Image (cartoon, rainbow, N blue to C red; front, side, top):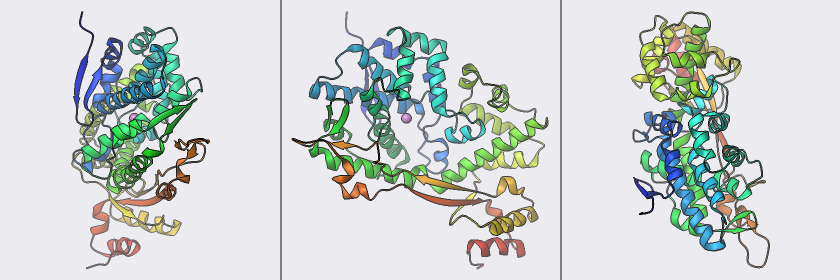
Length: 419
Ligand code: NI
């Protein structure tokens, strides 16, 4: 009998190889297949039109990256020693994002349960997934959750799944760079993997690999500043958030009946706990269909916001210091005067840009004859990348372009000349 083998073509890794029929069953579970209907980068496709790739493609990519890292560590240090640990590594990489909701972080703002909590619940409570996982051994779903939640039982796997240098980031940086079409997210993955080693429970980078790691850290820095927190994308997130907020409010007041059934359960809020089954029924197609329905809403705010999103008439971002209370008041008064409900049309958000955090959780470099040294002590480039933040104000275009005294006040506040 020929050995089991599935080869999937992939734009980042060329080929993704599945050699274990058990992993293939996981790939084909409904919970993993659902990730095809959730975009990896949320609303980024409205900024970078290529960013249509799904969390499914990234999940397979994280799995493949893990497979290659295991091959390296096996060759280099004979780790992992057993099939069980290998399966735990591969399945956790594949499932690490299974709890993401549509437009992830925006969705969390409406239904305030973090996607990592959902991942845990889905792994433990989804019948299909947990029974496939249990085929690998009793209590296996619990081991997967343990790695994801860093319970300390599998320290090496924890680092490979969630750390400054993990298979998740290695895949998403390359995949997101490729799909958005930007060049600064690139780094040499094969070389980075070849530079990995293990000492006790600590993943190390060989000294010869420092420049490759620098390239990876810089890639991450640029992807955060240029792609993930692009002001237009953040503005699109704000719009989704405002739509859901308005809809939830109308629903609470008994004034909204027109929506897909799946959304009702979500609006009931975390007090009336959403079941895993109900949660898995909510994906981006559900939300986009709801937005489509709401374009016909008798509520003008909801209808207008939904149209703005579907037709990409987004809020305009202004990168500037956070307005003072007086400035907020001016903007809100102007909005009201122009017929815009200020609670939904005037908003701001501070974006925290990830840098390289070395306190407690840095990347360690192998040193001959002494203790490993934390990366930033070797690299001035990396040392300079402290986390940073930026405030953005979001307004409808009409507010900025409006003729007359109200428009003048908005423009004056934003420092836009009138010509
Ligand atoms: Ni991920």
